[in-house]
Structures are given as structure tokens and as C-alpha cells.
Length: 456
Ligand SMILES: Cc1cc2nc3c(=O)[nH]c(=O)nc-3n(C[C@H](O)[C@H](O)[C@H](O)COP(=O)(O)OP(=O)(O)OC[C@H]3O[C@@H](n4cnc5c(N)ncnc54)[C@H](O)[C@@H]3O)c2cc1C
Image 1: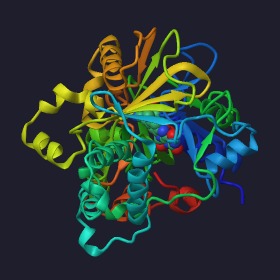
Image 2: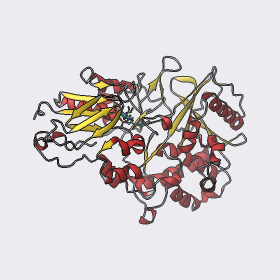
Image 3: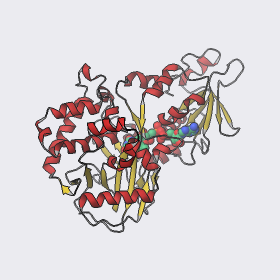
Image 4: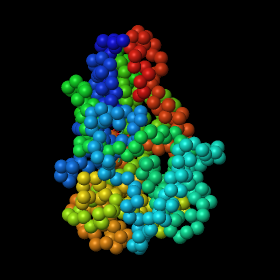
């Protein structure tokens, strides 16, 4: 059935979600689609750059996770955008070099034992084997409880390696700490079958964005057009189109349907003033309750490579790292002291595909946000100090430092979402995604009902 002519749809945000929605509607025959994007570029949290020459550096998304039923994987496959040879992108492999504070390199078999236990414990959480008693427990608390029951906990190194595992898991959860993340709700994450870390070819993630853009009529996307207000309950008897979308300045767009794809972080900061009338309570509750955290990358380009050929990454194992339960609890009491040791949240420095002289550091949470307030030069100096003191190698000054700043970007306010301890993920995610208003009264309700089930 072809869509009724004259139906206007405004899509807010030209990230992968907004562009896919627009592309789907255009393919279905809708003729009046307007995408409004706040920034001067498409892609949103996909940000493929070339700061170090021809080869790409991803400041945002990097991998396509899983294959079966993954629309991104299917699109990349259909457009022949996947990396041909087996991925040279970073995954944690046996060639990572783990160092303890003070310069001692840890034996890989010791590291692997602890990592295997950590993976087993998180897999149980992912598969929902947890009991009801875990319903309000944090992931950090659950992992500590289980680790303390293992014979591995008795060694001097292993608890430190376990802390590194938790710190690294914060990158997947985009959380300040695993003590903030729900243990039980981890099982809501669906792992898709097939290779997990699928890498894109030389065009990176931007190639996927371009594919979607090409499928849209020219000028469908309007850049530099931040939406400030959405008036969504206009009287249909008076207004031809019941929604009014107002951008900065005087520009506005009338629509029958609006699809909102702005990040949860943006909604947390702006939802209160963005909607007239205010959003229904289940939505404002969901925006408050679901977590949205910061994950940043720190790229260091050196003139020459100083690490061995078989080294896939240099991982930092602290004596008392920020994901150690006692350290975490103390940091909760001593407001702000963690700022002095923000760099302890850096997990390590991974090598980067196609860039033989580049390392990429990962940092999360409030420490990442604090780092964003510092000058890149200072961040580079801190990273070099860490690399020198942990490895004992001769580490030169970097030729270039580049870091992402997702936490302080005004249209994102973070990197991705997580489920805080005690929050019902299914309920809140459903509340956030449900279309509203459910049943619109008046002459538009039937004729324009085709989009009623699209998530907002
Ligand atoms: C550092 C990092 C690493 C990541 N790594 C991976 C990975 O390896 N694999 C993976 O699958 N995912 C990864 N992700 C997550 C992935 O990037 C996102 O899930 C995905 O890109 C989100 O797409 P989206 O379209 O929903 O939102 P976004 O890409 O955030 O798009 C929303 C758009 O809305 C715009 N916007 C905001 N406010 C307004 C406004 N008022 N008016 C108009 N427009 C507005 C924004 O500018 C943005 O362009 C990563 C993210 C980050 C930050």
C-alpha cells in the first residue's frame, strides 16, 4: 500500500538512526521527509576522520558487533564495505603486554586465567543466570562477590588484573564505574551471532553513513539546524499538520509525524524545555533513570614505533585502581579527589589498524569528562609519563595528540547508554521508544496512521 500523499515527516538527527529512518520512509514512497541535523556534518556518533594522513581514525563507533540480524552488518555486506582480510583492528589478544605499576610485565598465562574467569562471570550475567538477589546488585558488586570465592583471588597479582578487567568493562558499559551498573539487567544485551568485531574497509563507518545519504533525495538533510522546541499537540481541526518543529532562529517545520533520534544524553539535558506540552511522565522518568556515560579515545601518533612488533597493546595494571571496590567507595566519600588521579581510569593503549606509529588510549566516565577539560598537550604528556613508568621503555614525545570529547559535545553529552543498578531496562527502554500520542483524535488519525508504530 502506498503512503497517503502529502504526509510530512520530520526526522531529528542525521546519525545512523535518523538517516536509516529517512531512507526507509523514502523507499516506502513517502515524499515529504525532512531531516534536521544540529551539526554541520552527518553521522553523529559516527565520526570518521583522517588527522594522520590518508588512513582513517574513528573518533566514535569503530566495530560492527555481531552479524546475524544486524542491519549494519547486512548493509555493509550488501554494499561491499567490510574489511576483506581478517580484521587487523584491535581486539584483546594474547599479544597484549600487561604491566604492573613499577614496570613489571605480567606473565600472559596469569593474565589469561583471570580474564577467563572474568569472561565466565560476565557471560553468566549476560545469559540471565543470576538470582533474584542480584536484582538490585551492581555489576561491580556481583563480580567482586564471585571473584572473592575463587582460588585465583589469593594471589598478589590477580586482584589487580581483575580490577583491570572491570575497568575495561566500563568501556563497554559507558559507565563511570561497574558499581553504577545493574548486574541483572546485563542480560538484556542481545549478542548477535557471527564474528563479534567486524571491521569496515578503508572508508570506515562514514561509508555506511554515505550509503544512507545517497539513498535520500537532495536537500533532505538540513545541517546546522538544531531543533529547540517541538509543539506536538496542536489542534488538528485548526492546524493542517499537528506538530511544529522549531529550530534555532525563526525557522520552523510543520509535520504529521516527528521521529526523534537525538542521543539520550541530549535529552537528559534538554527534554524539559524541548517539548510543549511536556513529555508524558513515563518518558521523562525513562530519560532520568536510564544511564548515559562517556567513553573517550586518546590517539597518540609517534614519529617512530617504540613497541615490539608482536605487541597489540600496552595495558596498565595499577596497585589500587579506580575499579577496586575500596578505592571506588573512598572516591564516593571524598568528593572530587579522583580528579587528581583521573589518568588511572585509562585502561591501556592499543595499537591501531593501518597506523603503525599510533596508539589509542581508552578512558571512561567522570574521569573521561575531566580529561576533556584539559589541554591535549597535557593529556599527551600524562600518557607518555604512564607509558614510560609502566614499561620502562624509551618512549618519545608524541608528534600529535588527538582526543575525543563526547562528554562535553553539546548535542551528545556522552557516548552511549547503560542500565544503572536497580533500573528495569525493559520497562524504561520501552517507555522511551514508544510512539506518542498513542491515539490521535480527529481527521488525521486514520489517514495518517501509517507511522503510528514507528519508535520516536
Ligand atoms: C567513542 C564511541 C565508540 C563507539 N563504538 C561503537 C562501536 O564500536 N560499535 C557500535 O556499534 N557502536 C559504537 N558506538 C555507539 C554508536 O556510535 C551509536 O550507537 C550510534 O552511532 C548512534 O546513532 P544514532 O543515530 O542513534 O545517534 P547519533 O549518532 O548520536 O545521532 C543523533 C544526531 O542527532 C543530532 N542532534 C542532537 N540534538 C539535536 C537537535 N536538537 N536538533 C537536531 N539534531 C540534533 C546529533 O548532532 C547527531 O548527529 C560508539 C560511540 C562512541 C561515542
